[in-house]
Amino acid sequence: MNRTCEHCGEPINLRRAHARTCSPRCRKALSRQKSAQQQIPACLRSVDRWVGWEYRGRRGKPSKVPVDATGRSLDVTDTAGWNSFTAARATHGEQVGFVLTGGDDISCIDLDDVLDEHGTPAAEVGELIAATSGVFYVEVSPSGRGLHVWHRGPAGPGSRRVENGLHVERYSRGRYITVTGNRFDGRKNG
Image (cartoon, rainbow, N blue to C red; front, side, top):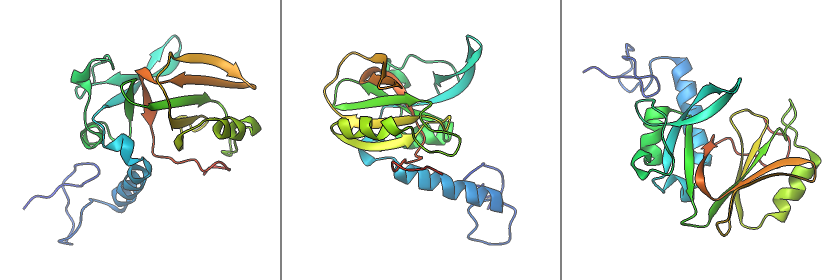
């Protein structure tokens, strides 16, 4: 019986019959990945509006471009490119995002550059989160310097502006937001 590693897909050549990974490195990575998955709220995981993403250069800086299973760019408003959370993770690993449609009450606030190099938030972050009704999940963005504040609220037009010194982007439809599973508890992260 040929078994493959649950993390990297390589053959498992270990003597242990119950081995699920090919190496200690993959075992640790799989454990971290499953832990991150468990942090993502079920109200997001249970909705089939997941896409993958890749870093690609745009205007001289890396951009997180939504992609399909073959790596081609996709339009996140086209439902044909959406997957279940499980399928998206199986295809794209940790680089997945959730599509906001405006058809439900799920919205997200994207805060860029609000965490310092130690993961400590700017003082205004707590005030913004406290002033936002319906917050159900806050996580660190892929850069490690930003936050995504997931909340329930009516759909509205997206906006980008500076609020109380913070660069704030608000979205509820026609966008996707990357999801890391790296929960932020409001204090120093990491």
